Image (cartoon, rainbow, N blue to C red; front, side):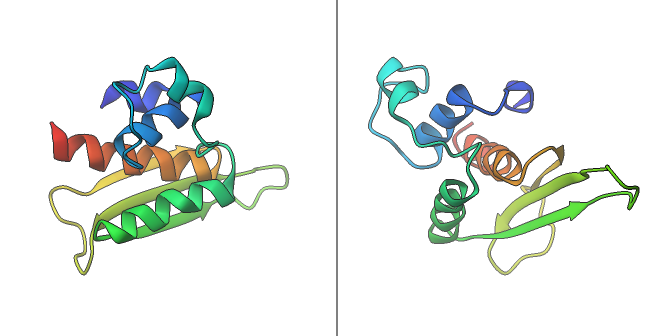
Length: 119
């Protein structure tokens, strides 16, 4: 899970989301065709919303928050979690914080949940 938190937004993270969350037909998230062909989940908010919709279909609720200090020039950070629908903060709730962009926060949180299910 630590490696997910270290991944930069971009093609590698997009491929991991395509493989683990969106259930793309590939041998692994490192598959070169998957890396090249994956949607831009981690960098485009409208595409990241496809991840949100997939997680809803899988029975998860979403919390997505933005926080800034209020100081001019502070872009703030995004916080995101997916948890089983109808619950508050169960043991298998993964909270991703201090992400620069909302799509990146959505992707990381969804990946953490899906990988925990498999692992």
